[in-house]
Image (cartoon, rainbow, N blue to C red; front, side, top):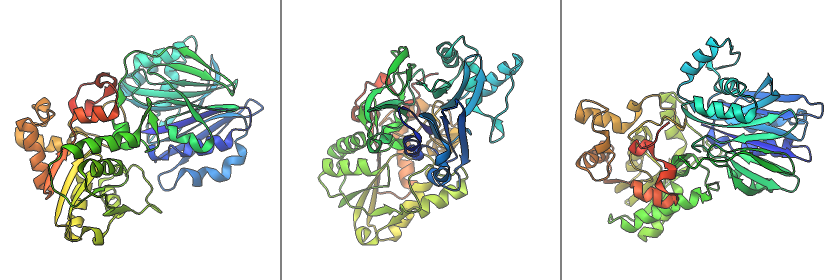
Length: 469
């Protein structure tokens, strides 16, 4: 995944740019980059590896060099960026939040047109460079971004810092990833997360629409392309990777999580002494569940935040298992002889669930019930890089389907349908495998109700396979 922040200000922008970008740290852990345009018209850029440290520690000492009133920054799980391009549009810096599924095909097409690639990302083509090459094939930025949107399969939202100091923000054509515009006296900003705004004194000005292109300076914003009617914003924004204080399409993340838990708690007939959220993204759901169910909320498991801030876990399975165990600490006093109902955002591979359940029983829990904020993940996401999964077979559901059907791709629509015989059998196997007293997933209908947007506007592909390129 990844998150970006761009600002155009009447005054020097480095402080807003630094902190605004840092507030996207929960969306990526591999690369961080900042670029500003100084008073001489030069692009000042720095990119750092974040895999062994945090964004702030890498960039704090460098801040004095980022002169100028406008800039863009990004924290990414993919490319080293922003990159700076010289083209027939002039010079510009660009950052992207993207997942391009047909990147190999597009690379061959561009090479056949005598284009060349100079940037690499983990030994492969840098997505952001490919994006920039598709853009400069157009007559202007709008025409080039249209070309980009028409060529790629997947998703792509971008920020462009132009040589006149203005910033262009273009949201993915189906709006799978968000861009929010903030405003304060003397400045406009664009961010993947509205969480970037409050402490920097910005107010949400507007949400960039699907496929919409806007350009802003310190004192005005103009629309370069109208938004598309169709939208497929990722539902997992609210389930997992969105920060609790953020808003997307006017819908607050924590409110959605609370509401999904509340609805589930109202309907659930299970008996438990207390509800507890698996930190961090399960907490909002658990507080809602506790209120809906009428039972107390207890912190029976806590996250050790001084050294384990919320972040995506490593792609290496052994290290991922270790991280999952080390960052969460159970509280024996609140578990001993208790029937505890835990809420979590999702079950992907099952590794963390297995380890947590084992420890919770060891710490004296009498019963362990699990409630999941979303339906079972049946389809591997093709549109947004929100997990490190490389194959559908990393999903516990697909491995169970293979065991039952002899083919991991057979009858997927039946397993995706709540309360079908296939669905019920699959959930029961997961429950038995991890020694839970009960296991229930939120229905797709409840998730959509909690989000508060029409189903046709929200991508639920990973649950029901319903979206498209």
